[in-house]
Length: 211
Image (tube, rainbow, N blue to C red):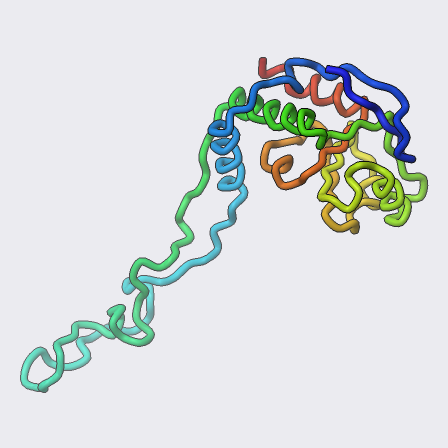
């Protein structure tokens, strides 16, 4: 598949051939959804926690005798019926939302989303990406000249570059990550994906081992 290559000034320089086994994979919505839900669940931090009647304090004795008071019978002030008692069916921090998905399925879904990005022209390829001073203004100016202007964009760099991370981290709707860390959830959360030629090589090298 032939795809245009831009420079940071937004000018089309050339075309490149995208690997067919990565950028020309038939889309399967069910598989992509399954992988996305798995990744989302694995990231989820379960912090909400309520105490049940066995965990709240107090209630060491019966509030009043069983019969003869004219009141309803109760065995403990820990009961969920009482103010300050335990909570019934409340959120618990032992819940587990993790779902294990085989690597080959995750890889396949990743390639499907990459293929969809290319098909819908939401993939932008640069000859190279760099930031001389690591300034936000510098990176924002470059992104403003590309098709992703003001849209949510994920920049996948071939290797960690501190200046690029610093220059893009304060730009609204823009994220930066290493190409080897790409995943379905990250791609779905951004409209555009910005790669360099070297980033494509990194993707090939990283995920080819799962073939």
